[in-house]
Length: 371
Ligand code: GTP
Ligand code: MG
Image (cartoon, rainbow, N blue to C red):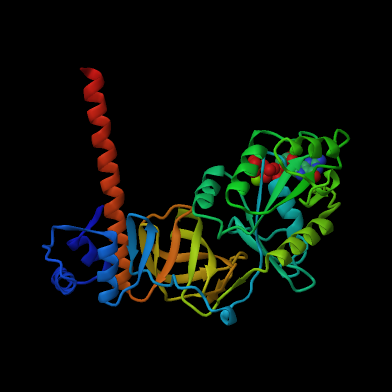
């Protein structure tokens, strides 16, 4: 299938159309700027002109982002596990995270610390770090899940012991399974008189979550965010699961990440929370963030403090965004500003085309139904 016009291909690479036409001629293909070529040919041209091509689908090819090469094993170093806390409304996800944060030796006892972002790190007394993502508003999380499993290493499934398995519990299980992310079950609110942890285990069976007590291998912990009971065991379970995953990344490359959250703030402009997957992000880097782009003006860590850089598994707020990214968008550092601009404007055009097509289709359908 013919997928991209010569002109578009040129603009995606920040090359002149005439140079793309010349490269095509070398391959024995005569084409004009308005003609379309297939993905295979596009890839050859991209190579020929010294850019990097990446297949995003069988029929599409993303160009110029680079950084898709695999890392050599010797470049990989251990990184902190990224843990998403999921579950039904009011089952205590945020409370549990608040309680876990108390064991953060960095923020100490200070309960008044403003949580700037929905993602933060906890440094345990043992020196180990865990990155946590709260999942308020499921939309953001669904988008992230759709972007693949890179973002989350482990899902903590919070189930209130007095309410047991509920619709969003089941939804969370499906998300985690689809992304092939291991689940740790946290049976919360065990301090309540109505708590029935064994009922929770029983009901989870129906959704193919086999906890250890039931002869399976899913770790489960009885906890209470209110009293703090079982939190040490939950931490142990996370570290144990993380160890099994042997999580590693190369910090010595340009940063790749995922947008966890993006919002317009008075006085600060568009603020994006990014979780770095690999590489190291620096102040001053040019980047593409979904259809947005920019130059990193400042980086703030989960405590709201300015930092110069952020490595793998580190969540940071990024200032200096031009445009409107969405949770779940990819975040890629580019070599040059013009590269970032090209990719962003190309994506904006694609988005616009999609909207136009959708509207046109709507109109035609309306026309037919009117007949
Ligand atoms: P959403 O983000 O809206 O989905 O809710 P959530 O899962 O984050 O629940 P949240 O932490 O806001 O807690 C909901 C309610 O349950 C609050 O009133 C908490 O105080 C209460 N709660 C949370 N954990 C416990 C617990 O372990 N024991 C008791 N007794 N109450 C708890
Ligand atoms: Mg919450």
